[in-house]
Length: 395
Image: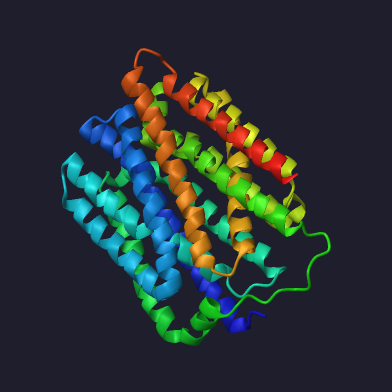
């Protein structure tokens, strides 16, 4: 069982997670606005940039999860934070698009050491009853600070200028790095137990699916999550274009385009307290169908009210899909940072493929107004077909 000191240790991990989510999200969301306004990037260029970051994320997160499992969680976190701090410091002094892109690529590599490691730290040592609670807390923390970053970031940019996307995360990351050194020094024994002791398990649940069915749900979740991030990162990269369509300033774009983040947060709360969705296919397939429909509406419909309503369904869909992927990953095995690395690598696939397809469609078929929306939507339909195929095989 997790001791009181162990709970306190995990509470600090959740605090580090929240600060990481805010700083990374703030930088990532408003980087595309900076590229648009200072370097003239349109949707095609921003999508290509998002695809490049996603490509790096696939391999870096996978290897980072393995690194954390072999070399220790604190080592991985210190390395990740150090790389991110250096990347932000360099990016703040670079005034060319290529230089800023290189700094952002380095920042992405550093970030990959954070998420698999934090996911493992908050999940290790939990029994069958505690694991859903730990995963739920993790999801609510990052989703809440992520939505806050998108909602408030435009206001910060308008008030302090685009330099704040470097300086605010820089200060937060410095604080976190200091906290990591302190936490390691004060809690070495707790950290070792959290990192290396096998998680205690309650007696087998008679209602739990068979191992074959459990593996099938893990495969379905790992398939679904990249497609969710195909939609998410395509949407994020074209937020400046959406803002221009409705003549929104960065501040009002942050207000109007953050609704899906709060809908995702609300979904995480609901799924956290209601475990009835665990290993239920109808919830996953319904979420995937909602994902496709809401994505197309947000990017294609020229009515702001309709776009706002569609964001609610979009947030609900990606909330359930992401929660499924992380929960099934943490529920599947003991090498949790390595499992977390695979979970994050799957996210990276979506980060790469969605914007890549969107950019390619704009490059080769620029004459069609909504070609990137159609191309990515068709890709999502293929994902739905793959999901149904896995389920059919599992049955």
